[in-house]
Length: 372
Image (cartoon, rainbow, N blue to C red; front, side, top):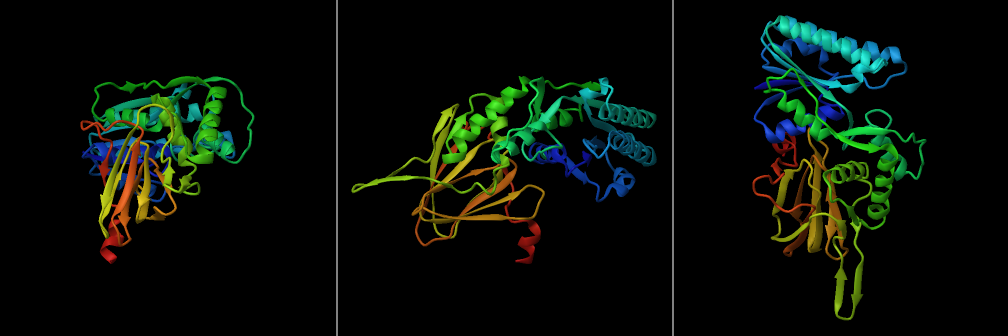
């Protein structure tokens, strides 16, 4: 299936593209503000559309409302011009029932897109989403959770209204959008976690007090805690890394704690790597994975999916450090020394052969591989 994905460079768009790439064979055509004017031609040979592009915040309420309506009108016009029977999935919102600029704009856009889709004989699905959170959300724009994380990292305390909110992780939202590509229904309503805003703040403070000083993994015994912790540590990358591990030495040698975890599953393993060899070349959707070099010298390289910049960390067993791989970043480890490399790996969950959460992808972008 050829799927046009609008808003592909935004928060939910990135997560949806990541999940489509990892779990499906669909051909994804990313659309952002840079190629928005090509929307009609991109739909000419498409099978489906996932519409995520939207305006969350702007200088005025009118800009939010009109911005979302315009995006909807543009897509409706492109659907009509394509003259094809399309399945159109829209990232909707529970706020359409509220009389605010965002809700009104999204509702009008939804109406325009629905009419155009049905006029062409297609099928429209509204995926009605609650409040979202997740890795790489923009503070003061995508989610109050991202704003909280930034405040905690910088030692600030924002004004907090203790409301109960429904929070859905961006990967769960993405899964609902992908499922809508094949479902017969016209509306999906994924359910999130009901939690108080102050409780979210307290959890993030708990994570920060545990993880920030020493890399100690906090209690991650529930899916929500894992998702929130991944959201928190995504904002720490790359400045917080590598994490220094403290050797405890005496005349017999040294003892180094590579992982301390306060709750949840966990699995440790180790590998030996001969000089010049690279391991890894994959990414994860939710797994927390730690690399700790025990012996030898290595380069750990990472690249955020759908970007070209590669970040390198040079580590050695003589000065033990750890790096925790962020979700959605391709990573590898290369032995750049002259002796066998010994690396310990830790994951927050037991390995499951039926759902390994490991998706192959080279760290070095194809353009760089060709040029070299």
